Amino acid sequence: MKNNGLRLAALLAACLLLAACAPRQVDQLERNQNLSQGVSASQEEDAPEGSDDPQEIQPEEDGSSGESEEEEDAALTEESAEELLAQTSVARMEDFASPEEIQPDEFVTFFVMANYQGEGKMPIPEGFRQVDGSLLIPGDELEPFVQQYFDVSTDTLRSGTMYQAVTESYLLSGLGNPTPSQVRVTELREDGDQTVIVFDNYMDFTETEQSDLGVVGPVSTRELAVTQADGEIRFQSLTTTYQADMNQLLQ
Image (cartoon, rainbow, N blue to C red; front, side, top):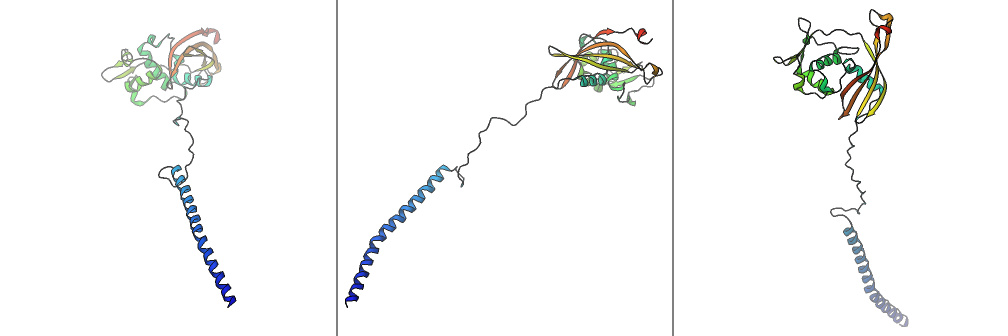
């Protein structure tokens, strides 16, 4: 009986102890739950609206539009200047202090020399050739080409004797076959907003009946002043600074 009484007393004491601890455990669980909810709420406030992920640090923009700046016009070199002279045959024109001094009909000759006379040039289109051997060149081909290199108006071009108003074309007669020539650039210099191309002219007899003469010269030294803008090169003046005595050169 005494042992049973002791067991009963111990059981009652354990129950009382559990009853006392239970509220404290519940309170601790509630505090842990509230703390967890508080941390979650704080993270949600810091995160961007509409995003479940923590806020990422975005790199600052440097204000660049991503578009490359417009490149400046490429500077002429001696090689590119020689190509320009050979392609346009401007070295075969008469001297001029400005484009305004050039006679309108000379621009027609320039067009033909630049496009059809010389090594590597195109053949003259059959549609240009007339029965008498003259050339009838459409204005819509000649005018924009000339204006690419010279500051000259369409009205000025059409004021020459070669312009045919009925057909809006230019009639060129008597264009000969000049002796082939070579140009060699010797200097490039800047003069204000202009670049001056200094070059020597040579006569090339190697493919003619006088092939034994070879290349003769320089027969002249000339200076071509050009300007560059928006990728285009404009001819401003052409000056001869030296002219050889051909009789002495060919002896």
